[in-house]
Amino acid sequence: MKLFAIKESAGMALRSIRSNLGRSLLTTLGVLIGAGSLIALTALGNGASKAVEESLQSLGANLLIVYSGQPRGTALVRRNTSNIVPTLSENDLEAIRELGYVTMAAPESSLNAQAKYENRNASITIIGTDHNYPLVRNYYPVYGEFFSESDVDTRRAVVVLGSKAAADLIGPDIDPIGERVRVNGQPFTVVGVMQSKGNDTTDNQAFVPISTFLRSLSGGSKYAAINVQAADMAIMREAQSAIEAELLRLHGLPSMDAADFYIANQLDVLGAAQGTAGTFTLLLGGIAAISLIVGGIGIMNIMLVSVTERTREIGVRMALGAKPGDVLLQFLVEAVILSVSGGVLGIAAGVAAAWAFSRFGGMAVAVSADAVLLAFMFSLVTGLFFGGYPAFRASRLDPIEALRYE
View 1 (tube, rainbow, N blue to C red):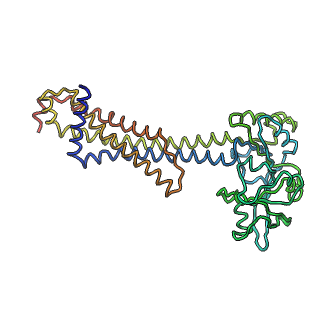
View 2: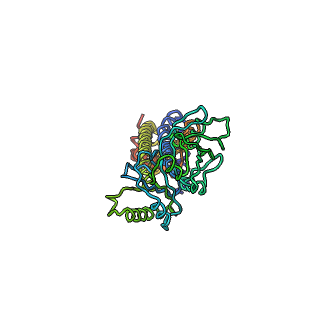
View 3: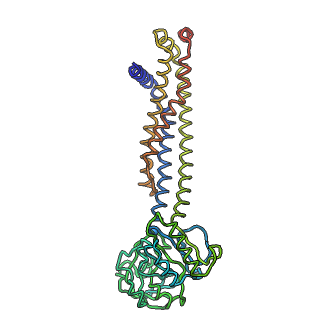
């Protein structure tokens, strides 16, 4: 019996909507915009969060970076370590490698240098490191190869160019492998070209064996940083604590307050970035929710007008035996149909807008099933909430007064 009443109310609601099609479409427009905004804006926020996470993962899996000196902000990777006074030694590196929490580690020092190939000159950043660097930092050559452990041990004068450094120095028409370039006047043989990271600063780097770097370019004996790959994401905190304790012992320091090094942890940066992205997503979702509420107010307004216009119709139904509950159900179903229709169309529009942002705007987007479900449920609740009062008002009309209404 209840199912029949709902079916009958839905039929009457659809007839009423068709008889006022233009007004009905304008009524659903507010909910459509709100639901579409909720999908599109949360997709942008989720996409930004995912892009940040992927960007951090591209720097290296389970990455910890031990820097010389005092903490400078929360950045996981400092673009240039040439202005750092090195305090990390070979003993520190070996001690870190011996820790059970660590899979591998690679030293790093850098300086700004002038590189020359035939009549071409370029200012690049030279990074001294060892053969583990590509594995630790998830950064590999696309041409040739990275230098080997033997190259590090024998202090070979070999260099692996970043993609921009190779293009600026050697050009696109010459195979760079085997070519000789001069770095601060010192000759180096090109053995590889790194993949492009899409960042001019990163792509304008060149890599040489750390032993060659210290002997021929910097003249020092210590490292500006040590890149560390933890054995697992779940033990990165423990790995950081173990490294701190070991380096404090080796440096003869009482605590991290007096330390001449600090550790940037991928988890800290990822957490901060995800927190910011999450706040951004909530803000965008809140704006979209306001649009849905405005759409709901529009539904309430139109339904109140509809009740007034159809007062005589309500009186006739009641005179023929319709109960207040039947009238309440009729108008409530009509409000829900308007709201849910706008919500479904809005979901489709939001998904289309997210696709357009990605396809034509180059933005990172991620439409989630949770956002789609939330938009649908929000539109349903909007219809129930904002259609409730007009429906209640219709059900409370006096049949005799309603029949007299002109």
